[in-house]
Length: 162
DNA sequence: GTTGCCGAGGCAG
DNA sequence: CTGCCTCGGCAAC
Image (tube, rainbow, N blue to C red; front, side):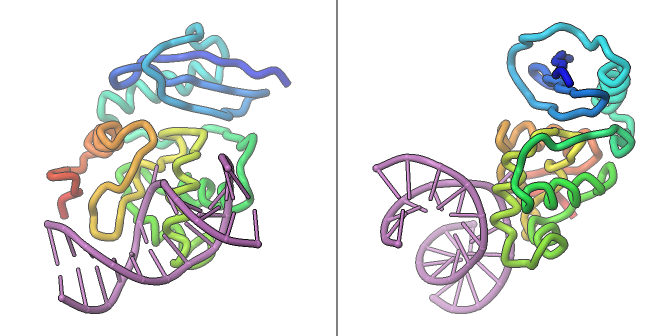
């Protein structure tokens, strides 16, 4: 039950991979790399997918085994719903809220997503506001913009086109 | 386009 | 327990 960390280059910094007994338990962004290169089959596999993803290929991360180590019941439900959104997909905070409880919880959905422990694999960047503006992002809206652009979206003036 | 009220949850005080 | 903030939404200027 030991926890293994590694990191790979991504965007302007690194993605920190955290795994535990064959499950991905964390993927976070950092400007610095505090760990070694991937050394397990899971991290190798993920690393390969991530680099192809960054090259612009439509990568499906839904086959990666994940496990949530923490989070309230509500958080887990939000992350579980969001994980199913396919590559290139776009949904609103309200859409997620309706599927977890009801539409009044859209703001709470935002709070849960701000605590998303597994970036990209749980694609919280595919959640935007109802008026098609981007909404927030813990690691910076520029990063969110980068991910959405990778997936083929056209963004102008902090707003997804069409 | 901008303002203002509403909202559930989480947390500091 | 109260008050304040948050990765939103909607109505109304």
